[in-house]
Length: 164
Image (cartoon, rainbow, N blue to C red):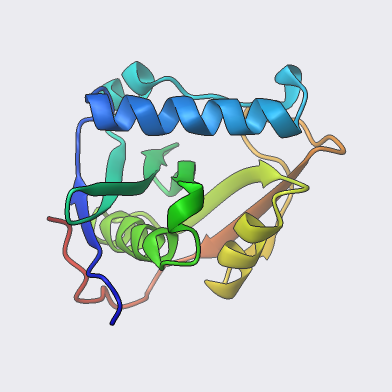
């Protein structure tokens, strides 16, 4: 039997959120040089209208992810992370689906993201959800360590996913 996963919008400065963000930052620094790690602090997420979500199974905190408004059309996916013990549980897929539903309900037409070029699981997640490669955007610069993806959500009907 698969454990139930609940996705809830939470304050990115909460203790659980900070713990996940700290784990994500440490994981990225183990793989990529610091100058290629684009860490967004919890305070920035909290102050810019981000939709920050945490996945839980009972009392266990599984992972997180956020949608951050870039402009009137685009939302950037940031801070997606699933704890190693929860990988392949569906937590990241559930978070991604709910961020997409939130962005669509708020009137955004495109999702964009930057991720590590060696982050195979993340790339597989995004491409399986219809994301396609794109050029660097915003203040990012393309390097050997990153890749960029986008997905149009304009005109799609919002699903029944609800953020708790």
